View 1 (tube, rainbow, N blue to C red):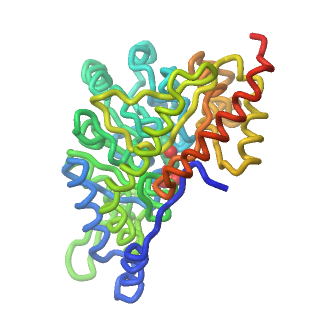
View 2: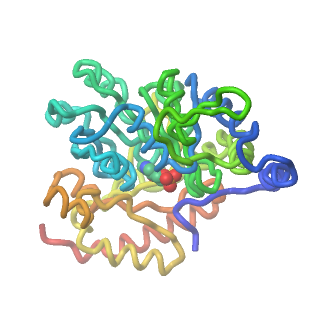
View 3: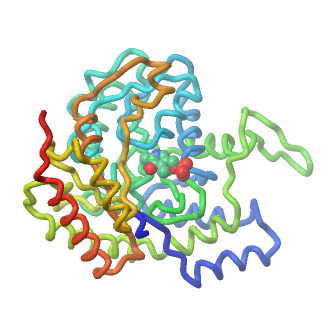
Length: 375
Ligand SMILES: *Cc1c(COP(=O)(O)O)cnc(C)c1O
């Protein structure tokens, strides 16, 4: 099965991890800091604080932003549940804003969702395509809100060659196995705020500051959300390959773009000239006449060896969200969910693989076109 996304681990990645395993510090040595400095440098932010996942990084970002009971964040329903879950974990309420057909939050609708309880806008750079971050920052500034960008898909993405991570008040990256680079499990917050960086480090590690000799002091409630040294060594080794990984995904994506251009039954997501996408996912958007046969299409391409996936069921459709916040429906998010199908696009694929994927996708989709849906 050719997965929609997967890691690429090479001999030097393995050597970097083994070196740590043979050394003295498995945790709390110098590799984590080295990795953090490299990430901050890569994206053009002052500070990077790593975590053991993007989920704990999101929790940290919300916590140090002061988001708590009865506060609200405005976010997208087309994301992994962690984006909004971590606000709920702090007793805040996620307010979902509809999206555009590129999968990103519709910045023109954000203002209508602002209330006196709103503390932050939390967009997600879907599939690696940058959100309209400058427009979102304008809105945030006008209403005195923070922008916390969940860029779990978007390490290496940018706008006019300025990297995601340098725009928002805080930006979160994921290093889960299938994300743009991996540490196995892992995540990070990048920020230009020293205050946030200090608070994030305390939050990550028990809220403890060292005083002198044995004396330390716990000044905030904290957790243990630290990354290990071997994870950081893997991340550092992978970070050196990020540009190569992205260009491999870009080659595949460009091939698909050409192959699928102006298709009658589905469309793809356009990356503008001035945007750089990490190409974490390659989404197809089925036209409405195929929505009723999407399950069949999904099952059949899987049967033919393509590990396709759907990103995402709108978060508010999950049972937990329905129980706590009632039924919700955002039109474009609903349409997007009915349309979206992510096909394999990763740095382990060759152009031949991409050709085979495109052949299967076209064969299956075209086969179902005759059925048509009534809508
Ligand atoms: C993967 C992902 C997360 C969670 O990342 P973990 O590192 O697995 O905790 C959060 N948000 C988005 C948009 C993601 O894709």
